[in-house]
Image (cartoon, rainbow, N blue to C red; front, side):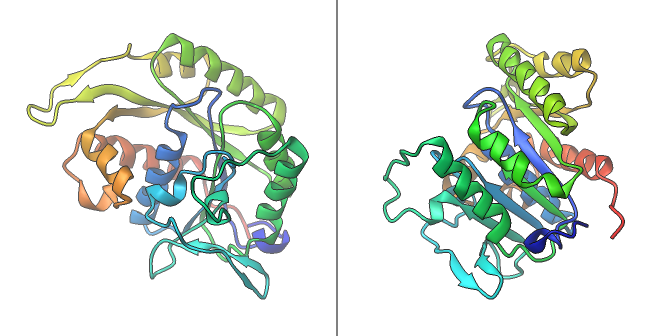
Length: 268
């Protein structure tokens, strides 16, 4: 547990990263939070994708407001039990269609404020949903969270060679930034037919596992394209609770278990 202001009650910090856009980082962040909650964990999501904040919609929290409390900003809670809490640029926009046209220094200042001024309380995991690449937002959040060492990373890719190449550079960023890589997740790994349950590899397959092998990091699993998962994200439903028989369910819960196994409790 870290002795650092509003992060003092946070036990583990995991950055969800990818060098490529559109691979499903926010999907993995949201579903990992739900799967960890299923295991009795309290989870926060710090959404630093300032220009494309999708976490509020995926967890049916859009339209909520961030309020002041005694210790800074109170995060938005997804449920009455307050087992999942969020902070996102999406809560600060007066109009959801408003574009965020900010230069680096203003982005960096808000990210630092998200880290230092949000009263997270006691959390087992703080997941950081990041934009694609290795730019200002990534450097700002790593620097702001540096007192919370060790920082861990979960890297998301899709099976195609183009994505693999970009994600390989993200792994280089992790090494340079001193992040401990929990492993690689291959998202959109085949399409599961909702009628016959047959899995068709629309893209190539196995790229994420091969990338993990070459990089010398764990491969956490493959998540198929699943219409039920897509629908639950669009509607902000709890996929982990509502679709235990879906094709993506065992993949996501297995990844969550590997995350639990790879993050032993820190001494307080």
